[in-house]
Length: 546
Image (cartoon, rainbow, N blue to C red):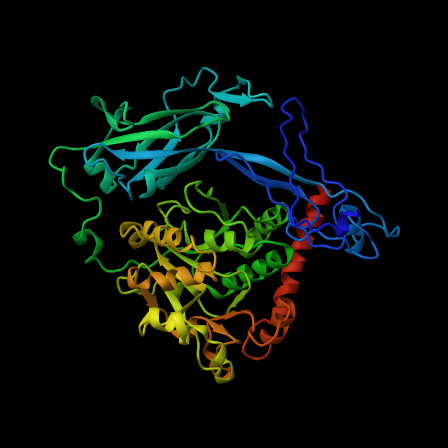
């Protein structure tokens, strides 16, 4: 039977060749008339990212008349001399970028998880600078101390995170070597808890092993088989009944401080959306009067985007940082990639960014910004942890498609608005203090047991949860979408979103060229696209001369 006729939808290869210097998985005789996506399945402690790829790993396909594989892809783009249709291999390389420390944190006195406790991880300072302190791990897992410590000592390696409610879970990225795990200095947790050494009893419960407090817990990343670490904390005298975040600590009487830097979070997958993401970044930087720093979710981005986006950022005057988080094994996963992306967009906001980031704005990759995001960053959310824009209802002809106005959503919302998730602003300090991440993950875990719930995961979850986690409704001007907003309101729009039209399908690029043009825009979408293309060309030209 020809493979094209087989009713298979997934193909799996397992790589366990520890002796090979170039371990690889090879797929042969795949269907040539289907669109394929490549995805890695790796151990929990591995942070694996793409390091080299010609093709779009999200949209692997053959291109008539050129054929299949990397060479056919380059032929179709005119990047190599045309030699006719040729089939060939597609090569995508991955690298192990980081290893993860993860584990549980336990409050010995209350026998609970101290969720919200802030932790920091730093390179150990106890290593003698005159002796080797760095380690290398070869393909067989053999560890050797071969690098001079100066190579490590010159790098400031630091990470921080929060303890989650479920099993007291925490996760921090690291690399081979010795590290110090601490309760964050000057945090409320450092006033209440001491780190102590605990031990497990025959029944599996934890008890105090030594009462002497520890300034830090030394962790050693020495192999690829980390099974999880247990961190035990004990309440200080006088704080036995003190909550980590009491009601009176949630309300601040201090005036809201204005932001110095506008922090923007976004994610994308596939070359087409990476193109849109660059245009969004360019429009944000052009319109925003404050310095801008982008935090882009790394897992789904191509190597070419990451390197060229950094070059573009240098040219237009913004910063770009890539962030990631490993989906915990105890949290119900998603097999469909789009739903996985939606999950990353909402479920880990409390732990994705450094604790020093106080406020962040999420912007969908397919948006173009007309307004100054400094205004949004400084907007008073009136005590809510985040703010979303309500769905428009001014385009009368599409109201029949407004699912939130009838049935389940009408009954559940009880008069509250249904909000769109294409843009939102998060007060991360309040979000963390009110343990909103734990609340959202608990609701997600409950609802996702039904595969028919959370149809639009990233949007439905905060809307469903708003009786427990309040949403501040942003002014309507902050998001204009042609499907739901009237043409008359477009003039006031601060952002333009290319949301799908419920009546008919239209390609994103076609929609962008049509909607984002004319006198309302300082640059049309095509002009912005041309600028991004020029930066990409400069980056490629510079790469060839190196």
